[in-house]
Image 1: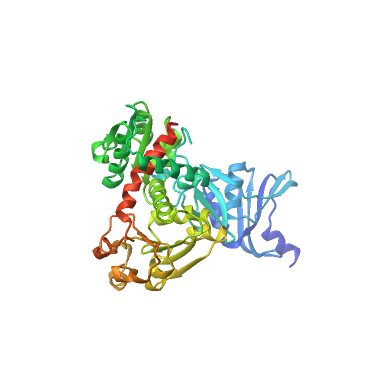
Image 2: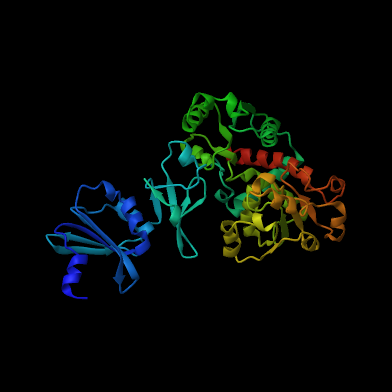
Length: 154
Length: 302
């Protein structure tokens, strides 16, 4: 790959965050859960990019945006392999991997339509569990599990 | 257990469950004990369940307590659009304890978080029905003399039957060997099987009923409902495969007992009723004793 080509794929941002190593098939879900469609900042994204580690990956760059804990929790649930790179003045000031929280509150919806959180004004609460390697949200109220594909975030 | 709510059978430890069963045995010997002495217990049935409601109300009245409440949402303020939280907070002002049945999953847990008095879950949608589980455990202990090391056979709808799920999970604390008999479409969900695996216990799955009867200490029958099958032909194929009749018990163990959460339709032939191994009607009576025990324990009266 020559330098010119590389430049096209990875155009730099001066300030903001790069979310790297998103599983290629999760890119659009990450965009959705972070509500980037409504962002008025510069947003770049690409998917099915070559990755030494993962074969194929997705990447998102958002100008002038640094994520709070509740947002990185969401990213971790959908894209557990993601890396967050914070940039100020073209310099990488922080690089971190996301970590899957043990509990989440309010940010996700329960998949069970008959759950009290979908019937009354009750904020959701989940324990994050792993079943056969897959991340699931165990509802504190109805005790049903929401799998990764069915996760909907508030 | 004083002032604690019972929402899910997992809320109580093995020791606490055993304690409730011991108190229940005291109530069986002496059902009329004026422990409540005029205390008020709310019985909020947001959906009708005559059997469970009467069992609770009988338990309360045998202990000298008074009942306030309603037997369906149609006669409550839900009709006017009141939220569950508001109903619960209001009723807390009038009662020392709330017994609640509600069609929504998780409603009991939520109610226990907003209430200022303890809540006993009398069934929340498809989720939990812990007092049924306690009476099942009591019935097993009473008929077998122990809860430990038994072979328990579950028959019928193991997928949607919440009483089956709760009882399987509770029995995982007692070194049970599980025999699971159901049509392929109605197998025990993997989320429940996970509890068996985590406890390192044995289970076997069958589609044929008869071979497992001689191995069983307890046969727990359930009803297979037509509406569980998207294809009516599939229902027709299995509907008669899981019916217990009296001759099938010929090879059963001497100590074997047949349980059923009731109501029964046709899954146990009526010719079983007079067999001494049939235990489902006594099982229902045991429900009153465990509910008395639970109320007494939660109110700190035993």
